[in-house]
Length: 145
Image (tube, rainbow, N blue to C red; front, side, top):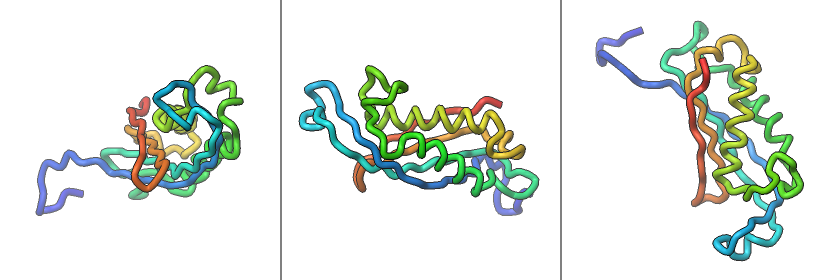
């Protein structure tokens, strides 16, 4: 529906859900200082999906399904020592790298239809991990369509 107030809108709708994970890990490299030792981290995780037009029900996506799928994917990492997880072997599990790993899992779940048929119109996914109230990292990319 076009409004009389604005013409030629090229905006994007978005929907974001939030959850959290608690993990343990350590880093390799002098740049990490004391974080080279095993330590814990709690991340607030935001998962945002976008599309240029709403679906037939006026939604970006089913918020309940998006929350459920994010929770399932985070459950695979929650309370784990990431140093022991084969998926991260030989990698520093930085906030940036974890954002991308969660992005890839969520993108795969969207592609297989786990958000329902209206999610076929989603164009972009962004995953943001906040490691504190002042620091966060994101990974964003296009969804196959």
